[in-house]
Image (cartoon, rainbow, N blue to C red):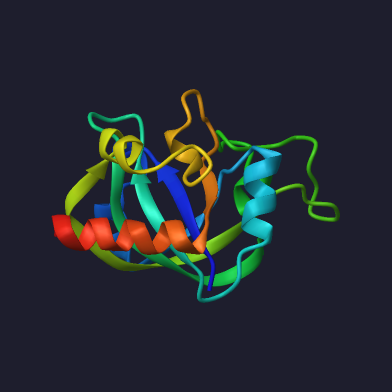
Length: 153
């Protein structure tokens, strides 16, 4: 099982939305590197849900990949902010995955706390200026995150 960190703004789609819905299509990703990370996900992988663009940003929950290789439908919806006129159903550019809610942590593990505990090599999200919304998390780093989250929760 691999681990990932997936960012979303809580006022757009937060952990509470996922908890209420149970599962979601993680669509609207329009960065090729992030898309390629999604393409390498497997059913059963886990993802840390990271609230971004909020005060403070940080890890708030855990999700599980339950379906992969889905063509992102938002690329074809003309009214969607994620519409891509260069993409076609015959040759789609964008994929997505379906995620299932696993849990919300009692306390957010803030970006500041992450920076105190991890180097940029261990956890890319702590790198200043990092804008990718999907990042791989090495196994040893994932275990340390779980250990920190258990201490906080």
